[in-house]
Structure formats: structure tokens, C-alpha cells
Length: 383
Image 1 (cartoon, helix red, strand yellow):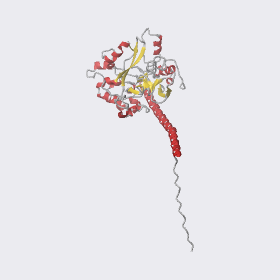
Image 2 (cartoon, helix red, strand yellow; image 1 turned 120 degrees about the vertical axis):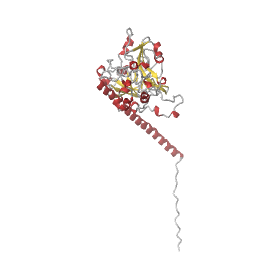
Image 3 (cartoon, one colour; image 1 turned 90 degrees about the vertical axis):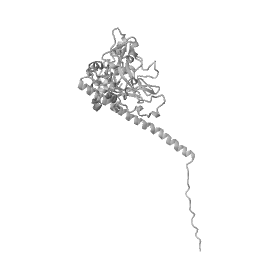
Image 4 (cartoon, helix red, strand yellow; image 1 turned 90 degrees about the horizontal axis):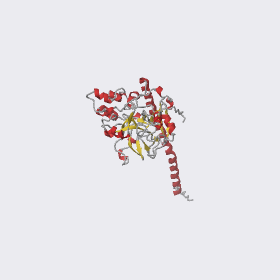
């Protein structure tokens, strides 16, 4: 009798990762994430840029629709008609002295965006407003003189307070998500309320021969207006006219007047540089200093910017405010100028309804030509 021995059961060999292999896998995964994540972020930003352009195209077509019905573009702001010429010493008194001949409460100061509300499917907001808000023929001072029960200014109307505080998504760039950040996560240096400005009066300081785009701080009034990223172009300079005897340099500024002015509706035939070569609407992000924003444009009361921002005339960057360029960014931007949160450029809508991106490295003369409607400096779309 033979004894048959049972086969020995072999246990499978369990082989673990060595430390070197594990580190290699981690390094490979990290490299892949480093490659893929920027690509995903770039794709998202590209989508936001396209969405931004689509919004601007809608606004440009709305302004052109207004022009088709009224034979002129909407006034940039219902401020004072014609040139506001003062001395630099009077500048602060416009804000503080209600009896000043150019005191802000003597006009509506409502923006072109209010005028185009019916053309962007916002008729409900427009119909809530008192008619004087969008009355381009009657100023606030004459209205009050003929209406004994009228309030001191527009902020006396409950409807104005409600509508001006309404957030309109069409007026906001998808890349500018500042208002979506919870207050608890903001830096301590940032304000706890949504910053904004109102008013956009075009002013010329005769004694120093400078143009100003005067903005009024919302904190002075009984309003909490919602912001906008899309503003009308007053030109490379915001000066409407200069007095007799002004220097040649000052007279040169006037030729760069833009498509949106104070209580003036520009006609298409007045855009002699060509509608495809002239900026009508641009992006703006308010006042940002060292990455901290303290002010934003209000769509209801402001809605204007000029091509040279706060830079010295005919300079590509500011000497007085280092970091400020023609087109602002998330680090430095000025409330009267154009700017965007896009990485390398800002979007602009031309007077023919087309939308283009302009890089921050654009030459100042080229940008001036783009902003003016009759400067005889025609720039092709490829430049």
C-alpha cells in the first residue's frame, strides 16, 4: 500500500509597492494634474470670454435698435448738456454745494443703460421708473420747477431705489465674480458692502487744461445701486469742448470725442471714422488698487468711461499712479477707465455691433483712434 502525499498548497505571493515606486506614481499624477488643470481653467476662461462677448453684442445691438427708432444713439448720461467748463478750485464744490451751477442734483444723471432697457428684454424694469428718469428732453431742474410735489432728487422715488438696486445679469461680465464672494472670505481691507459710484459728468478744468469724468460716490445718497461691467465710451478724452484761447494740446483732445456723451445723442453718420473702427462700449471693473477694489460703476447712474483713463495725456502708463495702464486689470484699474478681469485683454463693442478683444499692450495712439468717432485715425480690425 502506497501512501499518496497531498500536494502542498502554495500561497500566492503578495508584492507591495516600494517607496520609490509610490513616489514615482505620486510624481506622475502631480505632473498630469499640473498639465490638465491649467488647460481646464483656460477652457473655462475661454467660455467666459465668449459669454462676455455675447453680452456686449446684445448691448451694442440694443443701442443700435435705439438709434433706429430715435435716429441717434442713446445719450451716455442725462447730465448737463454741452461743455461743463470750471476751474480746478470748483471741482469739489460740485459735489458739496447744492447751489453750484453744475450741482449734480440739477440733472437726472441716468445712464444709457437705462435707455436701452426695453431693447434687452427688461421692459418690466423700465416701466417701473418715473418717466423723467429717461426723459432726454427735460432736465431734472426744469422738471422740479413745474412739479411742486417732486422730491429733491431721483433717490426720493421708491421705484428708482428699487430698480437701481436690481442686479441685471446681462450687465455683468462672467469673469468678474467679485460680488459672488461671501463677505466672510474677503480680505479684511475690503469693504463689507458692494462698492459703487453714480454720476458721470464730463468736466473740463480750464485753468489746468485737463478733462475729467466726474463720478459721484453712492455713499452720499439714499441708494444702493447694482454694478455693471459694460460702459459707454466717451472717447479717448471726456472733454466736450474747450474755451477760446485753449492750447493746441487741449484742442487736440476734443477731436477724440466718443459715441456716448452727456445729454447728446450721436447720429451714426457722425461716426466718420467708420462704425467698424470705432469703440462704442467697453469693459470696466471700477477702482482697484493693489488688488483691492473700493469702487464700481453703477449701471443706472454711471455707465461711462474714457480711453485714457486717469493717465497723463498721450502716455501708455501713468507716472502719478504706477501700475495704472490704459486698460486696467485685477491689480490696478481706475473707475473712469476701461478694464477687465480677463487675463490679457478686454472686450469692446464697435459701433457696427461687432465685438473685439484688445490686448493691454495696445499702443496709446491706436487706442485713441479706436475711441474717437471723428479723429480721422482709422484702425483696421486686425491692428
